[in-house]
Image 1 (cartoon, helix red, strand yellow):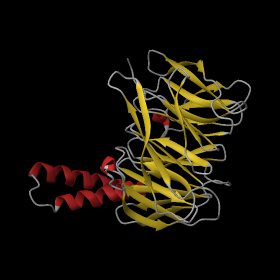
Image 2: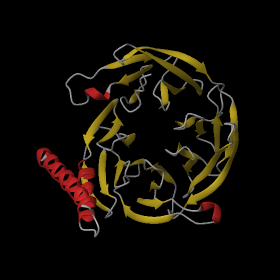
Image 3: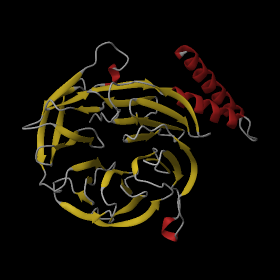
Length: 346
């Protein structure tokens, strides 16, 4: 069995089409993709299954989820995309959040109201909760699959714990903790790869970085690591956190800002990426690239700030006592390669 997770990203548009791209072609002039046509209307949200053998999207005209399965050719590329499951309508208000758990056990959706639903993979509800956020702006599942988080009009991000029994059956969804400190609604938030950090961006013009590797069952609160300001024009902003948690990408309007999370300083600003606003920003699984969406295009940038933070971390480790010779050689090699890459970019 060939797993294709991480080899492709997804895009959707209002021309009734979903495009599945091969990210191996990012550095080439030609970009291979497969097109899937959505029935009746366009897809407004989309998410991959953990093994990348299927994806789920929201059919906009009736607020319904549909699951598509992929079949592959002998060379590993896609032979066909076909609809597999259609879910019942779950939300009366517009669905504005969609995610699949990394362990493949459940799907999460949330509406522009205050309801959030966990589904099984066959289209039945596990449970639904009221977020009490006045209205939801977004919701996500943590990369570890343990937490579901939601943000909205209120200044807090609320996080629940998802529990399954040892037999694999869904057990409960219970409140774990909250991320507090903003003075206005939270536009967006993001986890790092091991779910130990969360970054948030708020209508109040600030971003915050929290350590959530805590004993929340014992009442321990998340720890604020860094906070800073971003340039806001009153439009909705979005945020992404690199897999290692060392880089924060902030997008507001048509500008992308890359923040060194180790120092809290803005390392790079890229202006006028689109004629309109950036609607989504994220890092690839390896942290090598930063992706933005807007104006019917996805643009891919080198994560230059990530190379700088890596050099910073590696140099710090070199100065630690007790580091073996083999480790020093490896760190020195990594530093040299990163510096050479930065020189080639300049």
